[in-house]
Length: 208
Image 1 (cartoon, helix red, strand yellow):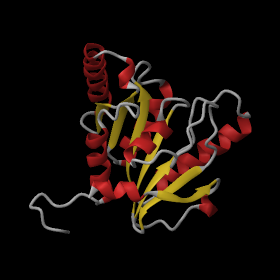
Image 2 (cartoon, one colour):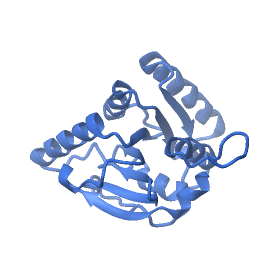
Image 3 (tube, helix red, strand yellow):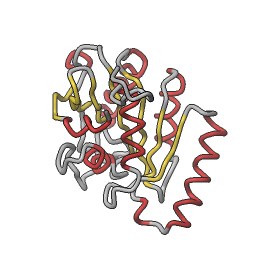
Image 4 (cartoon, helix red, strand yellow):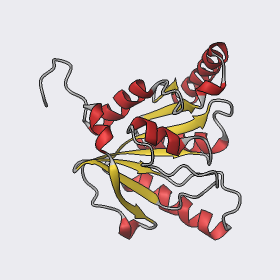
């Protein structure tokens, strides 16, 4: 069940392809601009306070960070993008590494793109969603920090983003509001991720 996400623990960090774990089982990757709330979202989804480090320094995550949920299911924290103080050579390395990861990783079953609800669908967000759609992977957008807006503004932004995503990607990308602070939308997101990882029970209640 998606409650298994609470068992997530740090496994390893990979700075290049040789350091990646075996390409087997199921993985869900998390992407987001620096300070969009990605670490806070991972912590809320796993109901842990410090699984993913929350940093006010953009670009602190400089590797693919793997968290093991079960021996066959992993969460993958991608480098925060939009970092301004990182040397161009390092940005180029990350770009090539992530591009290769998306093109070749068989275990990758879905992508979660974390966006600040006040600043959604920036160029990098669209780029990451395009990666997933071109590969035929489902993608789910989390409009984080929803607690910063009133309910009316949340609904208006959600409707606008949903239309833009549908126009650009058809039905390949789903979207929801989310807040790691108030825990809004946590159960909905856990159900999506648990489904991709094969953690949710079958609809008839029997075990797979």
